[in-house]
Length: 165
Image (cartoon, rainbow, N blue to C red; front, top):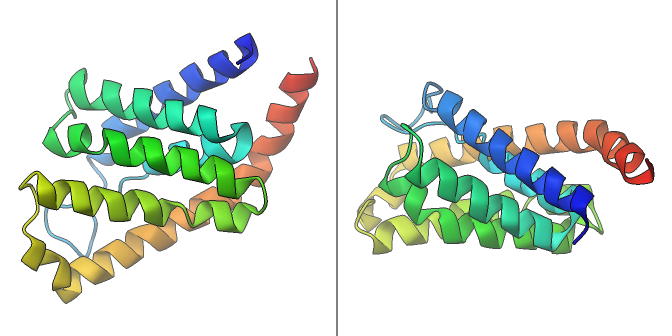
């Protein structure tokens, strides 16, 4: 891994943490007590633009720092470390072929988060069958995919220019 890639990983992991501090104020309008976790898109964008290893590291480091070392850190964030690492890895694998397919890996993160939260006892399994939960998850997923599809084309030239410098 190049020094430049390590710098990108550090910047994107820091961006994940910063956005993680802001999203606690973005409630999901469909699910009481839930937020729109826009910081998850940073992991997917990292995977698409920088590859599977970088995506995995941004998920691991960003979520880990946010979960253990910030005021927004909570059990949900800590149990999302492995799901977000896998999401970043899968975004890097799939996103090299298609930005749209890569954006859909946000579903990997959401799905693994739900499984982790159920296993940890943070989310009752019965809650995921309710209409509000499903609509809220669908709303968040659509927002996430839209942000990824808008951000990747804007950021790709910057990453390529920096890679050439």
